[in-house]
Amino acid sequence: MPPESHLAAHHTRAAELHAEAAAHRLAAEAVRPRDLRARLGWTLVEVGLRLATPRPALNA
Image (cartoon, rainbow, N blue to C red; front, side, top):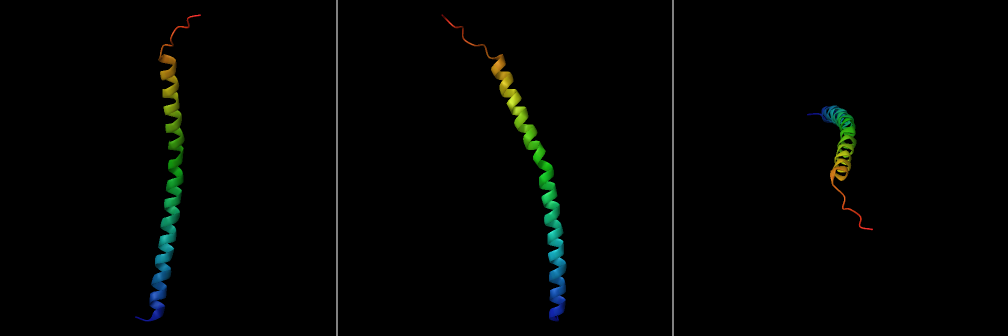
């Protein structure tokens, strides 16, 4: 196989890998808002549990 054929195959595969990496980056960025949503949800659960827990009476 002549060297030009190997070079052409390399350039084609490199372009495919770049496109795949770009698609992966976009998909990874699309997932991030769920992290914020989960943290907010657990914070609301914690606040609700603190409000529902009876406090000991103050003896003054």
